[in-house]
Length: 158
Image (cartoon, rainbow, N blue to C red; front, side):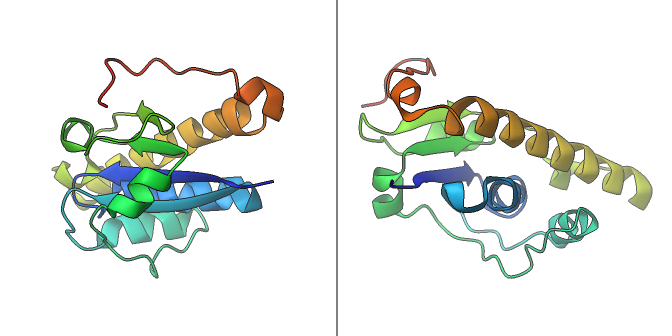
């Protein structure tokens, strides 16, 4: 059986989408194929790397990438993690299921080092929980049920 291909998108592919890719690879194991990209490529955020390392997941080998049209068009799911990516994401074919999970940008957190680290952890854990729920509800369902699922994500962008 073909693995589901999930493509996480964010503005700069530096933080939220990298965290999501790390969690999805970790939690999804060999059930899914995962990539991430951005509208722009800002480089990997060192705090995202450190925060994921605290959770036992190494994303230091990830790279910040621009959206690849071939990957975008071959994905089973395209999941945007910020409003900018949702608004600027290129049109996808009808077979691509589009989801939007808006998460606060921890890279914009201000305050002390502890307060900023706390915001990164909060977003990291929220992304983990969303992916775990999604895997349980969508990926782990029997194939005959998944084929009938239609996810309402708003107006069609095709």
